[in-house]
Image (cartoon, rainbow, N blue to C red):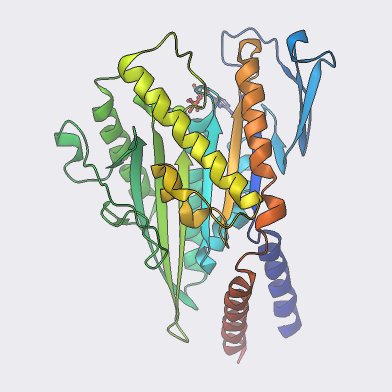
Length: 384
Ligand code: ADP
Ligand code: MG
């Protein structure tokens, strides 16, 4: 009995160790859509690498290979993609800050990964529904040792303005509320304290909320078509757990970010609002890249303040936080230049793994050991 509990606990502990303080990058290739010619630029794919077939102007080898923590081919299911994300999500309940974001050009599958297709079925649920589902499930499993409260916020960053997609005035006004204040410290865990935070206890409630968020987003989109590809949207989940035996609180959070399309626009072709949007997107994605490379170089100054996006994600990038980036690519030949620049950006992110693992390690370890002791005590108490 007891020995088995210890074994189980060691397994869990090792899992957490594996995920400690790093940034992981998963690449996902979307399948061809109905009606597309299936001339793919994607050559060989294996578990951790992908080879892209390149035209002569990119060099005479004719191909380029990239290495990531994981590569999902066009036939990977939503369930498969999620199962590799699950341990990360579980660590939120142990008091970690987690950030999962979707990067890639418009149409490459970011929203599909995070939310799912337009018409949702249980099988096609994206990461965010599955994540919440999992959190509900585990918090129930732990109900004898912990009492958890879970709440969500939904915001959008458009042209460096932060909007609350769950604001109660949302659907009735032209634009949902602008919330300007982003907190830079992790004291309360709320990066955007002014945005509405809604307690949730079931997946049904979550589906309703996301629907409201989507509608609010659509309200803002009437003046410009397809706003969703030109704004970052972020679902933030806050988890607070109280350990019943000791009364100690554990706080964790998770940002699920569907980034604006990473495609570069041709400056000679766009002007006015469209150019302004493009400049804001370029600036914020570049700021994200800069923060990540500063972390990789263990720079003493990390430029979080250069964009709303990096301010928002500050607690989830670097330090003890765990970050996962899903990098999306389209297989079509005419996407080749965006595909290569996406993969290059992603490789830069993947390098952070070398640098960030040690920061704040002690704190994390103490926290983990305390949790470990708590769960062992509880297991023993049950036995007696
Ligand atoms: P993005 O959010 O990056 O602009 P979307 O997620 O909207 O791209 O995907 C574009 C289209 O491709 C949508 O119709 C979506 O349903 C489809 N799609 C994307 N990824 C997949 C996938 N892995 N399997 C099936 N269809 C996908
Ligand atoms: Mg999208």
